[in-house]
Length: 448
Image 1: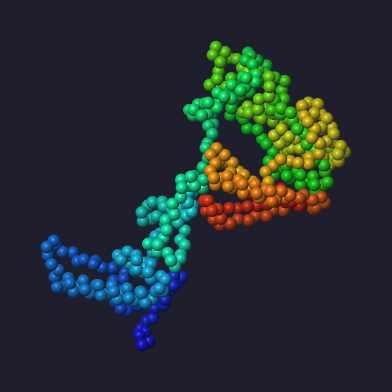
Image 2: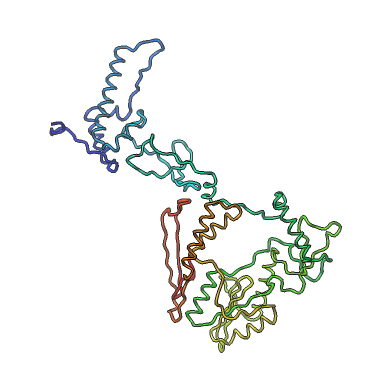
């Protein structure tokens, strides 16, 4: 019986998962049959000869011997490889060594942005390529693998591409669409008599000169939710004030003439606003500086980590906490004594609407926050896929309209945090995603 003698080596069957052990055994078997040089180095199927010359007898014998050794080596491999694995080996380039590693040595440099796969630097070709994930299937073969072609719009959508707005007038003026939009906006402003051209004042500031100083702090939703969680845990009441024309609470507001629309022969003049004009680059910052200076003068202490959170404490009256959220003010106190003085004084100084107790606060639901922000990137040119996704989000909202976050009273005031992460979980860019959630005794107030 073949393979039953004591001196004959028997090769294990290679099934795709025992390659290292199988390779060591096969090397020993090939060496015992004096076939290792053939397996390791291969042979040239045609012996070199000058044009018109016939092969010599020695060359013919050498060629026949090499062909026989190659056939024997291939027979040994075929007998030691499973029927599922052998067709893949037999179809490979015959000049490649039969037992060398099939993979090429590369250095991982990241993930593909527009397709699933790994971006690797090939040490042999000195090029960066994208290697698609390998999915083994018994029916896979070079001749039967289907080729999937994707539409260019789908590729753009998967790349999360969006139009970048111009940052200044010089960039906007190069685009005819933006130029037309600016002209229409200026026509509407003049039609509504929003401003009038006057001499530049010497004793009042003019908005719009330094466009680098336009940033205005806005309370983070995490801060508002933390305030709500604290008030619920302590049993405090939350109140809300609405600011009228929040960005224009000065008696007179002057703005420079917009670039590209400077009136001829009146270049030194400025516009005096007669109506509220939202959208001024420096208006939000001007309002923040105004309300910040007022609260500091009243003895409030601004948080070092949240520029829109203020706190005032009196030994006999308790603590009052104020948060500025754009043109809304949310505040609460521990005893109910400080908030009346605060409301009276601030409403005397600024035009505000007393909204009473805080029952509703407009903010994005956490469970649809990612979907909403992602869909917003394609508002300029949505596709059928985006419309379908938006409808799916609306159906989800309809079915979960009663969902919410519950903040309970009387819970122990302790900060609890949870953190989790996955490995290459994003289907778009194959990147890892980490997440966290923090609670303050009951419902979560911060997450990502």
